[in-house]
Amino acid sequence: MLLTVSHTTRYVFEDPVSHGLQRLRLKPKSTHGQDVLDWKMELTGAKVEAEYDDQHNNHTALVSLEAGAQEVIVTCKGSVQTSISDGVTGMHSGHMPLWCFLRPTGLTRAGNKVRQLVASVEADREDTLGFLHALSYAVGEAVEYLPGETDTSTTAEQVLTAGKGVCQDHAHVFISAGRLLDIPMRYVGGYLKMDDRDEQEAGHGWAEAYVQGLGWVGFDISNKVCPDERYIRVATGCDYGEAAPVTGISHGGGATSLDVHLSVAEKLLGGQQQQQSGDGSQQQQQTGSGSA
Image 1 (tube, rainbow, N blue to C red):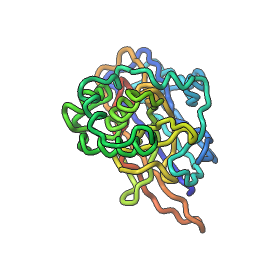
Image 2: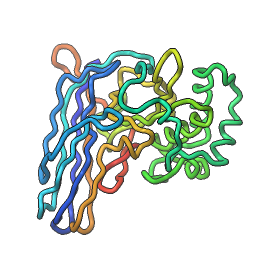
Image 3: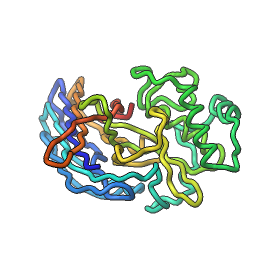
Image 4: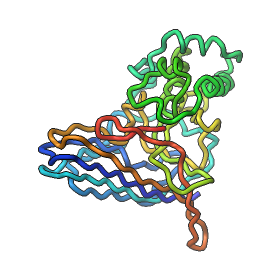
């Protein structure tokens, strides 16, 4: 499937910014199940200071905000060829050893709620893949998909207590639960082409578990599927914070407003284009947005 993405993030500051830095993880990389054909990022009110691959092998751009800027616009456009992978993205690679994906983080540390959820799953734990499918269903049943109830600082325990959240929260609960069973787990941020609309607020988030013999396997709890050719992987991390599309700090500027425009489209043969979009939303973490 040939997918095209147009993603614009616009920040408006009440007062001129004196200084600011942002870390952008907005460029997908060619990997198992996807081939990035072209990708372009344009900045207004900021400039790229450095580009590198981080500890999770995410392509990262460090940008500085122009002194005196009251508007910063980040625009990404590109096309990605995807293929069916049944959610399997392959064996582990990169700089981080697998044991790093077993450690709890502030957002995924398990408490009584997560432990009770794991104990409630009636599935054979020796069948890792089968148990993970049962666990993903249990997470979806325990946490109603409801935007606006959580933000990027909400923990897995808090999500289960509230019983409400979005895809980012589903992923964190699933990750927290899987790590209790010594299964390496990670967060994935990216894009999802939906079948019912062509615009969305921002990107999507899901989780991957490492299964011996298969490698990393994706689980989108919010949509009750394993990622397929409609998904574009952009960044991974031990939790959302390590895969956030935009994070940063700024001095001055006063109050900040954020406006995001995103479309994901399938480019069909003959030059026709059927526009679709993901159902994820991203919420701001400092100066960036998160997953729904």
